Length: 294
Image (cartoon, rainbow, N blue to C red; front, side, top):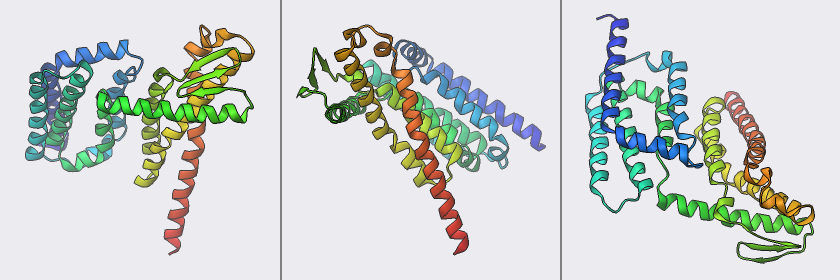
């Protein structure tokens, strides 16, 4: 069998495995899509497989340069995916979010296992980034999501307090409540910026893959999302509060800036991440230059 026929056969086998996974995980996938279109937090999920597929296509020459059948590793991952699916269906105490989180973990393992089985370990190493990117289709488990939201909420409240002080605004703080002239606001969970946090994480992961070469630099870029998110949240809270206190209270009740202002402030987050990426790119260049001189 020549190489072209071999690749076509492997593609057909992988598509067949993907089709089987679609049948096995059909109901959870439908539930996930419904949740994604109804929840502001998970609107990014339907786009993840397409991003992963685009990266696979762009890197297809290096990914499919050397192929082999990896039966053992592939079947282990596929079997683990099936085991997770059946285990999730038997655990009665799971809420809907955690059920989908567990089941979609199994679905992603099935897809990765199918890829390993059909294309081999070398192809998997080359395609590791777009394949692992599929884990973003998994809803965040509640035991992770709730503490993370609380951490963002606490950080945003503390930094908002500092910014109010720097602006010279008279206020009284009681936990998450801030009493300003004419208004009282609460830094609620909705102010945590969890949606934009996830978007910044995905953006930083993609930017790290495209523009950075070293693992440490990619990790630093991804971790930068937290202080950027907290600062962006605090800036939004302080801006809306000052406008409501000194201009019109409708800025925190019914204005477009309050309901849909996350977009311009997300742009602020991207603008803050850009110099971090630039600095990391420069640091990598300096290290490469230094290693050549040594």
